[in-house]
Image (cartoon, rainbow, N blue to C red):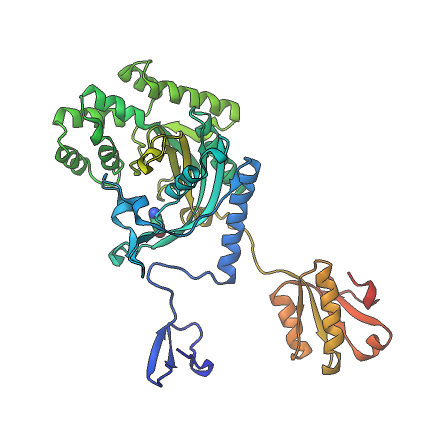
Length: 445
Ligand SMILES: Nc1ccc(Br)nc1
């Protein structure tokens, strides 16, 4: 479609355009439903957030990896009724292949670990920041894409991995100015639920499905949860037992109910002791109701929440020791989390912690008349080679340039005038102090 600029309604939602056959059409200027554009101001905030993700990953000695957003649908076919697999953005490509816009990143990580096989030495500590998709009926008007920071450790069977990942989350919050009074990290272990199912001799194949159902505690009513659990075949006695244990908020109570030799209790006690050593004990709390909604978790699970309880989980993760075997490989113990780009921004806004990210450049170079455009370009070029951010303002009037300098927070205005240039000089104006002086063009830096 060729959109004639004169008819493009900037800022509007549509424009008039004519297609190649001259038919008059209206192009919707909005991105597809549930997706976002990132104009410069929004992109600066996103880049600032991602730079913080990256800096924490660097200090944790994680390596960055990346994957296609497009993945084989087979990677996400799971039978436990998770929301994530019921909202796959899936389609058939022109080669007849079943593909998806990935809804999460962990299966891609697992795929690559399997593919790398013996060529990588464990433990592996990998991170990535990638866009994830869901196809949700727009009735709820929710977004269909978000960016997720993922941190995953492969080949670390003990809870040291969970302790490392929780430190990464705490470091991120602290970098953004969020404290343990604003946010907590509630944690538990799926081995708690496993122990309860064993107490009622519930078959193993129901485990994932039961986890996905009880993850809705707090979102659905207790009655609805009980109904869904009964529908899987659980006895009402087992259902009551599950709900009773999952309402525990004290590790010592859990130990009373399950006994000290249960792996879940040992893992969690170890993790709380690590938390003291890492110095983030005031961030975490035990909460047996935390199960997370992904079928493949097998051990410790955790999620960060705002203590005011106004927002959805800020991030979440857990141990998934048996995911790789579902892709036909031998298992490698693994643990990871996903941290979305949306809830955290809502929290920062609410706490007044969004940074000032207005545009800033070093220099504006301005030729005072047309014949000085060449010299102005060479001044701009030499400053850029020295690493300065330089905006070359041409075809404008000086009055416009001063306004432009203010608008983009330029530090200096470099004026290239005829008489100065003939003496090898340019005029420099420091915009913060209004100080103005001449300097040899070749000495400018
Ligand atoms: N998994 C997922 C993907 C996309 C969005 Br928005 N939320 C969750």
